[in-house]
Length: 142
Image 1: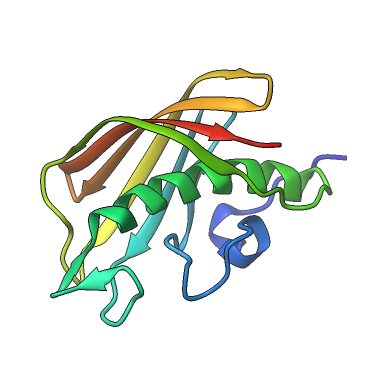
Image 2: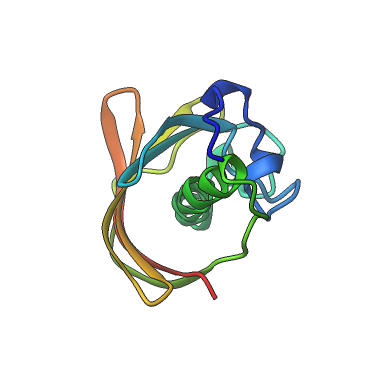
């Protein structure tokens, strides 16, 4: 039986295979079959922060974890275990700037296609209304 949970009540630890210090989302802000959004506050001392900014690899991982959060939330409300996925490809990555410590990322992924355990998404990262990064990602779920 599928039971929806309040998104803000769901811990990233319940929907992601990653564990601290590798977590790059604070929580879900939107979920449906084709679009999912997360938030993440860039904090000093995080594994992916250097010289006061989140590294580009952190932005990519944030996008991937937003994909993982989508599947993880679905599995949680369906009573299934969290599955481990892998980044299959990152294409058309555009980073306009890296976010600074204290800025909050709003990351949205939009599913373009799902077939044979592969999910193709468009990802967008914003700080307030400013788009700071976009990419197309392929995520593999074995």
